[in-house]
Length: 311
Image (cartoon, rainbow, N blue to C red; front, side):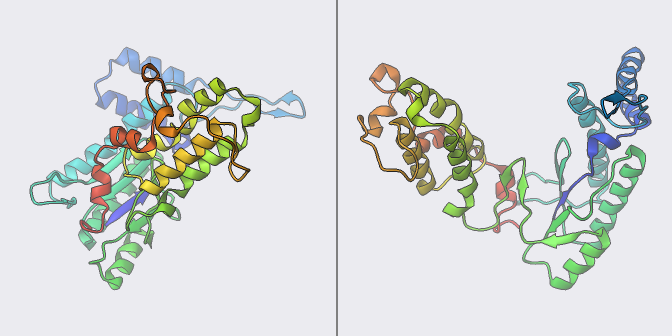
């Protein structure tokens, strides 16, 4: 089973004593710890009420969002949870997932407050996960949003066991674990509709620009820096269907020559194969979506791990 954990207002709930213990556990010098804690605890926000500032408030926990130091401190705090999980795996109290016989074992993936747990669907593992989460939340001040946290089960898990494990973890099961770091986790065959959001984002960007008010150089720059950058993130973890790449190229081609989606097609002065050539070869340097995908796409361990062939 795969458990996606949602933390409630993670930055706002970090306890300061837990943060200080974390810095000390990672052997930060005491002088630096005192300096960091002074930066964290010295904030005093004020509320404007009818144009007048109320007396300053004195927070007792939390990290200020927007502070360049806060992400580093939060990652250190979450690293303690990672160490707890690794200790449980070493003690064989947590059974991770192994996609193949000689492959690596996966127990968790963390990126800031985006947490995903991997384990075998057993009552012992579920109880251990709940114990670890409850203990960590008690010490850190963080709180798991059990309404937004979801459990994705393998097809080999029976309905009765699904209900029992979901009740044990006090979370609901789901057939689609949603997105992780902005990328959909795929559980079925990839279709054109899977990446509809990528096309919609490109169209929404272009709809706010009037191609007829921009010259050719301006339209070329916008395509290179914006519309080609939007699908690049999805290409790093997924192989986009040919139809999606062709649609992106058609949109860029139409916008390049001053046209708009759904409007009457304008004359294209140069064919697309010439446009996608390098500037030294007489083109505009705009990359073809399929060629860009070949250079960008890398094998994603998480996609393999969440495929139907593994789980």
